[in-house]
Image (tube, rainbow, N blue to C red; front, side, top):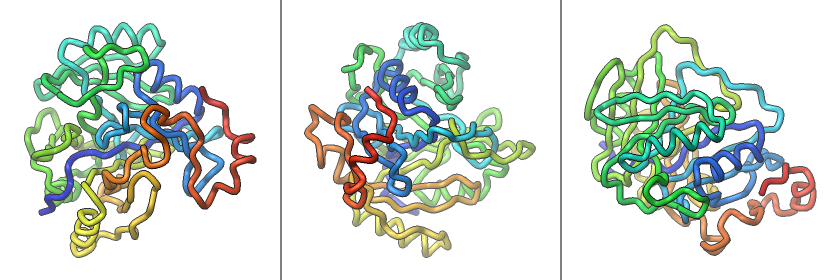
Length: 309
């Protein structure tokens, strides 16, 4: 069993409009845009990162906004709901704020003894807030949401699978423990994690497979401290039979990827070097930052990419 993984690192999804995506995450949810860069494999598409003040692993939601992308189709083999931690007693505030912003899909419920508020993003993305007592992670409060209500980071992610068996075994191998099960959902938690500690697995054997598109989660990333820990994880996964990519430099972290038995794309990402490697903390996410191999495209990209505030 692995011991290097310390919870979620980031979740990456697909969007249609960069400006609508940016407005929702900064103006409505109050997160900070910590990086404005481009997709390594498609540099004519943004890669936008939102999180806390410095983009702490476990707080970062990222997006590829493809202007002409088709709408995703929800189904099995994907992350269905990304869940944020908010302070106890704050769901009333968020209900009002999301209602005023015109958000769709608002629904309050309770699961595993926690109060939740479900809502949809601009492309129908599945999100929820969960009230968490004593989440001591520092929030970003620069976009008009107060400290008593602001998002602390991720709480969990929920995966929809046709069969949970092999993925459950994988999560246990990755260091997760089953902590609860209720109403067809199994909850796994990582001991000693970074606060973004839970994965919920929902088995839906009669539901068709998801189709990737706007509003879909592209991949989910798990955090390790550094490159040495990442290499240990990579070797263990490969020894177990998983097909894992070589280590890829993503400028702000190093990444490896592999496809899970349930169809979800997993990434293992390092906490180093961080989003302040090419911008000081006070100005994170302001300038367009390009990977070195795409710097020669700067002029044309600045003319092509949709302007965002």
